[in-house]
Image (cartoon, rainbow, N blue to C red; front, side):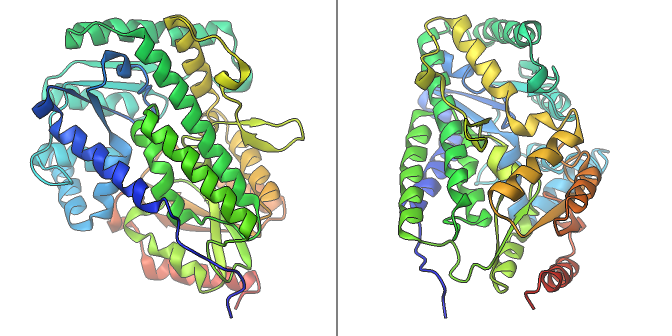
Length: 429
């Protein structure tokens, strides 16, 4: 018998519509006199927004994740990249993206839509080189901002201004590359909407502290992704307000993500996108993943709350932080992104272990599943040390090997066997 009531998210369809609209707008931008640009999901997309309302990005990681889900096309893309001499141990997202570019095929139909410029920031080892190659291959202008200034806890004025000054230079680049005059008011509004949307997602994730959890991670992947596409967009920020209100209502009414919740887990890093059904496999045991540092904080922005808990960062609008000038807006944008939890553990694996153990405690978890993800050097850095720290804290932990973007490196049957064994250790058989 079901233990908890469940129901579908009312705003689920809207998330799909926004995603479809995003990729359609990018593909058809030139038909409507607009411009296209490419960069990463962590790029400062609020900055190109100052060029006008008809500037459409395509961010490489979510686009490549979509390719990975389309297994037949992904294999062709990966082989196209390998035929150019690129090694299989490079970022799987990058290889899928490059393969789509080489094949001149768009994952959503038609030819690969050539971007007008590339705009990126660099913290992961592949970031700058990814779009340098795109820019050279497609003969387009390129600008990259270095954000590798160390952990946020050590941020000072010099480090902050190192990033802000690059942002100022990037605006000069954008004006020259596009021939457009920059609008500071559009930048300011974009920063406001970006901080609003990324704070809202963190707030939504805190609602999963409830028992039963109102969301499970497989569904959360389809919800958080909008932030990786266009986090500065007002329509997307408004959507997260709607989603936050609905998830709050689910908590108040005791609506569960799965009807038989009896084991709460978290995962880590990107999942194997071609095999998301492993999250459904957990459900036969009454187990679910309530999320992960990856799904919570790839784009969600967090802070310590007065009661000692981890919660959504207070927005600059709520604090009354002035954003009346270009430099004020850029300072807010730089500081906000430099506090991103998923950026912190590029410098020290202990920082990530501390955050993961915090999630275990505050979200009342029974265990941890670690994806030894060979497709992402950045987010998998230090994962062995994370496993040791979790085990030493007395938390049951299992690991499985795979690749978020290359299905050739994931063994579904072996992973299911490992899950079965883990469930047995948790007393769920």
